[in-house]
Length: 285
Image 1 (cartoon, rainbow, N blue to C red):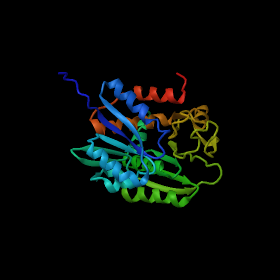
Image 2: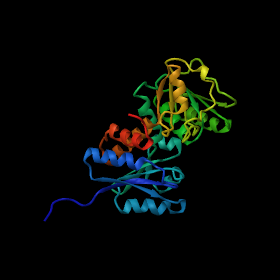
Image 3: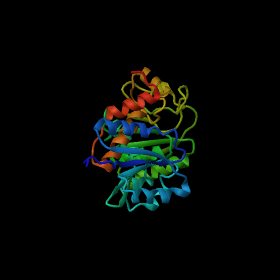
Image 4: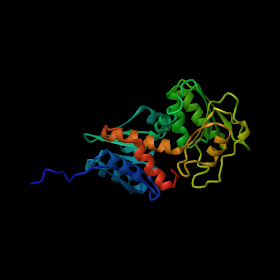
């Protein structure tokens, strides 16, 4: 009788639409690299089926799963507990299952923070955040909890920016301000880190957020959350001005690493993940 186990540990993702989600390739490449018998299953789950999907993951003893749009808020109703920053953000994109108990986390901001720490720590820094969507909210909360001095949020709908600024000032020790985005936004002289948290540039190598590029300064950190294309036009222009640039691939990779630590209590290889994504997006080696 063979002693080999034919029961793989299951992880995955619930979202809709889900066909363009590259996380499955990234995670399975890392599992193979680590020699783990773990699978990542990309599932298209419609909103009315979310509760059943969560119950199914628990019943089948999955180690955990990611939740992407449009489930990040709705999934909270089906969890046993949520971690501090996810509670502040009001959204969960990663669920760990331990002994039948489901705990929710938000790795959007955590992934960005881990990527940022490869070049700088946020403590004491002044941040310019472009956009006020879900990614911006998660990033702002994690930067504030990590000790950022001030977060300036600009958005065409100022009310959305104000909600994030108010949240930061109410729940953290960081100062925040909201501003309306009109025309080409100028980067204030004292800003240390600029983050494009909008979808401008996603899938379009020529698109660029309306920013006065001449106000970028040598040595400033310029980050983009967009993974495809990895090197956006915004980052290309920032590099020309001798800024330090961060692509969205780093954020995506670190989200995967953090998620696997919650699920498996193991640290996966970042290079294996990054290589898989670069192959998908056609990044030249």
